[in-house]
Image 1 (cartoon, rainbow, N blue to C red):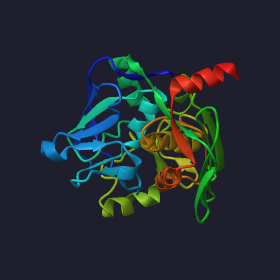
Image 2 (image 1 turned 45 degrees about the vertical axis):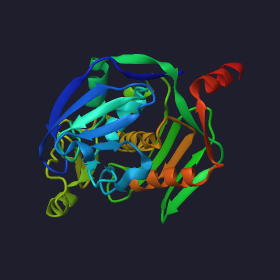
Image 3 (image 1 turned 45 degrees about the horizontal axis):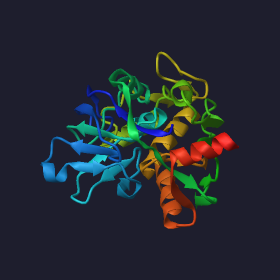
Length: 297
């Protein structure tokens, strides 16, 4: 993990936008060192097209994470791609998209992991910069609580409670972001929702592209998808996937432990805002420095 990474080659894909229902074309391109992750809207004028993947540009968290640049251009449903980039340790990439949201694909990060692996991963001649959590930070909104605490590695623990369905009730999950763990444990876990919410979402102009091909739909105590669940605890694994993607908007990997009770996109952005608001809670480090300390320990 010491060196920055980008893609070896450019790769394309197409799919449906979850909320717009529009066909979306997306291209991933290699980027130079220290570039970070930038979204480019190819369907708007060039002077308004660039949207950096940054926590302070998050403008909406209803059902997805949406970014808006200073010119008012937006890009939504970014969290599953961001999670794949973090899970495969990609630091620098340009994401071109011809619509206001990314394609939903199958509702998980697995198709994006596949794209990245097909493009290949290129090590770059510059150390990776990481964000070390120095002290506990916590945000709370009613019964929702998210925190970050010091840790030598990136790890995620989350808990969800849905008492209205026996399919979920209470689920807990844990992920330690070691090599290969993201792909093996959470990448294929899909977004989910309840059948009774679908009509209300569509009346609000959301979920126009949603289907059993790109989301797990729950009705009562059963899953409507013909293939059922990919994991018995797919729901909490997807919540962790979302957290991995949302926290990568910090601008680099976070060395710290994330804990979430009933987490969501709003709470994930809230914990980043709380951490960055306290200059004593974090610092930038070269990954080499962290690697050397880990080796000594």
